[in-house]
Image (tube, rainbow, N blue to C red):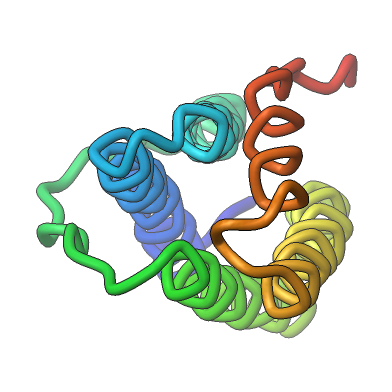
Length: 168
């Protein structure tokens, strides 16, 4: 059974995932203001994904007989100097999420809470993908100039991105 400390930590992570959704919506708004609609779509999809993550924890808490508690959140950063800065900030944000998931996993391991350990494995795998994706985009952005055709090709590519929730 989930103890109070682990339950509270999962609630905090759920709320952080909701906050992450807001972070990415703020990034989308910045991109839209810069007329970079593809990049804006990228972050809108990212926001949907983060909300999905939060709801996954919400459901897990309820399935384990614990109450999900929704809390307020800080204001996300809204101003950036460049699209590269937006992606660098997102990458740093994902690194924080990874550390938070690792902490939860350590707590579950210490408690020998096997259902939570199994549940968190999905998030660990997801974080590997998230960090790799942002790192790859940052490396590409560093190689191209904002005014180049490659930049506009990236914008067009990101306009096609959609969120498809995992089947399991």
